[in-house]
Length: 71
Image (cartoon, rainbow, N blue to C red):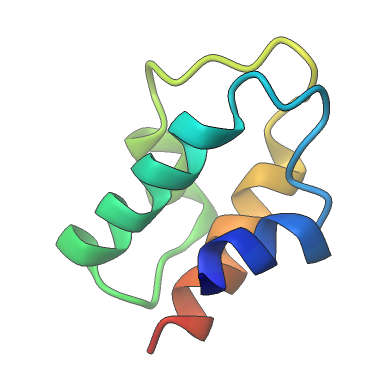
């Protein structure tokens, strides 16, 4: 899936514990909000998806890239 590939390419994973939920949430965000997402919108949508390994920077980059790839 394009979102999975984006997470791999943009280092959106660390330990892998939160990865399935992040990817599922990301695909849902794109289906509801569209393909042109800014960082703020992505961060707001991820509120409640916790990742203790990262500061979400690479996750946000991965979601933005995955959203573009899903067009």
